[in-house]
Image (cartoon, rainbow, N blue to C red; front, side, top):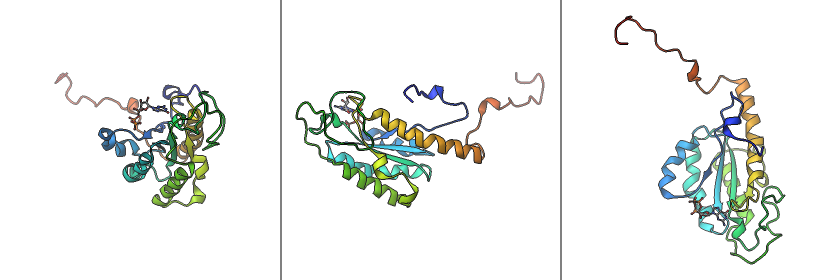
Amino acid sequence: MADWHPQNRPPQVRVRAPFALKGREQFHGLGSMYCRGAAAVILTYDVNHAQSLLELEDRFLGLTDTARADCLFAIVGNKVDLSEDGPGESRQEGGGGLGPAGGGCAAPRLPRQVQPEDAVALYKKIIKYKMLDEKDVPAAEQMCFETSAKTGHNVDLLFETLFDMVVPVILRQRAQGPPQTVDITSCRPPAQTKPGCCA
Ligand SMILES: Nc1nc2c(ncn2[C@@H]2O[C@H](COP(=O)(O)OP(=O)(O)OP(=O)(O)O)[C@@H](O)[C@H]2O)c(=O)[nH]1
């Protein structure tokens, strides 16, 4: 998975790559467009900024209405390196899901404002909002992560977990149903009705 790149994907698989919904106001209008047909959505907040988690629910969840009915949701608390109970600097810490929040902390940093259980609660709200049954979706603990984009903490784990879940589903659906994409390379140019006219 470490060498995964969109250009290396199998030719018939079109994965709408997970993307993170967060960030600046001027990009909010783009959200529902990017979510259309999405198989996985990563909702990202800042563990040191409580408002960022609230905004996921208030402002971003509605944008996922255009995602697939079986869309997977990952809730990601980022910037964990800044929180006082965050992990150390290593890029390859182990652990899964939320994992133990402590350990390896070199110096006191910011008091965290969002607890792992807050993310789990949001995940459960999303399941309700989507009118899904908890039995039919991955467990909250599997889909809530804490990451640091700065140190790389849990970043590989996040993407590997999502791709491991999403790719088999897409492959299975492709095998069952008609193709959902049009191969424009197989389109022939329109026949010329009047030879010599309008080259
Ligand atoms: N320490 C630390 N800084 C981070 C992390 N992720 C992003 N940043 C920094 O946070 C700032 C904002 O990052 P962006 O990727 O632009 O994110 P944004 O969506 O515009 O978000 P905001 O954090 O809401 O301002 C930049 O200075 C990043 O370098 C992280 O995991 N740890």
